[in-house]
Length: 396
Ligand code: NAI
Image 1 (tube, rainbow, N blue to C red):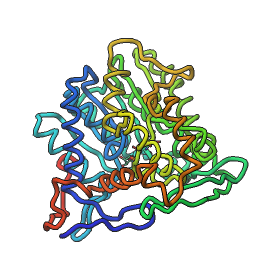
Image 2 (image 1 turned 60 degrees about the horizontal axis):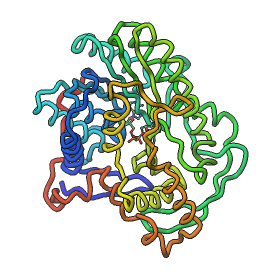
Image 3 (image 1 turned 135 degrees about the vertical axis):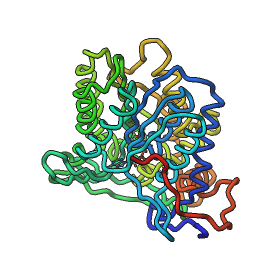
Image 4 (image 1 turned 180 degrees about the horizontal axis):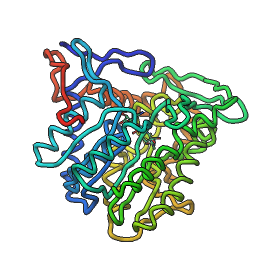
């Protein structure tokens, strides 16, 4: 079929298999170009199909020759219907990994469930024996609790008062004021249940209980802080409470891993265009300004550049891992640089529909968004008939 982008609100309903493959290949090439990373050799990535998780899987496989198991929740293709991009990404990843002689298997299902956890444990037991790195990179709007059965929904709301600020519709470039009503009822508890650290801890405890974590194993989950501009809706909002919980969980996991000489960290990453972040109000406008500034300063990074730096300059240097005063790894250091944030603060009040294309990198944002779905890659002929039916070869 001829596959074109079909948008509904902030999501794209279609994705292009060849474009997704190109995206994965570009990331692999980047990692190879940076040389080997003395990292983990048997790696489990939870949330492995898009964004930071995919970049982590690629960095481990092609930077450290690691065997990888990827867990994700994606929609396979059906006749006349494209798969979700994470499906095509994973198919392309496995193809390239197998070509390179690397072990790579994937599990498609709800990582929050006991069943998928058990399936993953069984696979590790059977094929790898143990893992020495567990990357936890889930971003989900919902979680069915495996014990209570309750379906929790996360929210992106301020706490204690209405938050009003500017945002941009990155499709039209229209800058407008939005007001977000404060959270109510169980919003905070629900968001913490979905995006906090409980599930991460459940994974690690389940792996540990079956002796599937190698001596010295490490686990890392991803967090975000961002500037004061977005604080009310992000870090001091409902999602921020979940990130506080995730960050606190790193300490309890670290304690629990001491008996196997293991370590647990949260890495604070940079704001980037992913399916998860494009849904958060205000963030697209912030990212548009941020991209422009960071590109001009020559310090712009995407997911793959971020994770390559996280691995080679933080996690696997052979030295003690540097953290901030709250025990977090900071790979958002360039985003949070004073000169970068000073420019954001200066440009933010000026941004309008008329000047955003000039003072911000709206085009870069839009292009990255289309890339997530496999569109706008120069190497792909989008007019050509494309087979939407693609298998992930080692789905378990
Ligand atoms: P993403 O949306 O690109 O990836 C989410 C991954 O989780 C996908 O592999 C998806 O298949 C998987 N997933 C979702 N629900 C699942 C379920 N129930 N079972 C199994 N897999 C499931 O997200 P992104 O942006 O890469 O986020 C990953 C982490 O990085 C999140 O914790 C996010 O808060 C954090 N982060 C994101 C930043 C950003 O700007 N995008 C910045 C800093 C941190």
